Length: 87
Image 1 (cartoon, one colour):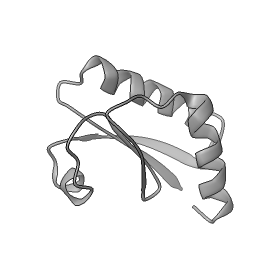
Image 2 (image 1 turned 135 degrees about the vertical axis):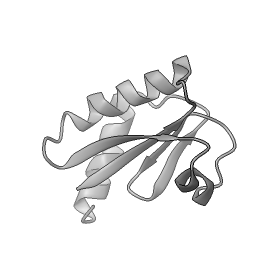
Image 3 (image 1 turned 60 degrees about the horizontal axis):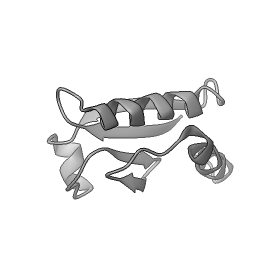
């Protein structure tokens, strides 16, 4: 299953919440194939990506956005590409 990771602050800021909502909207187009995971920007997994600002959106293993919200219509083609490559 393809993961969309949304790294944000705890408690989440407005943009982190929006980024997660947009990711969930995009994932809904791919039932059973995509899951959205919210992760703390200060957690160990975030350090592996070298995160400096939030929100950060990662599709599969690729950082697709730092510091801004990616609208669902822009996430969908990124998800399609990753799924075509085998997730």
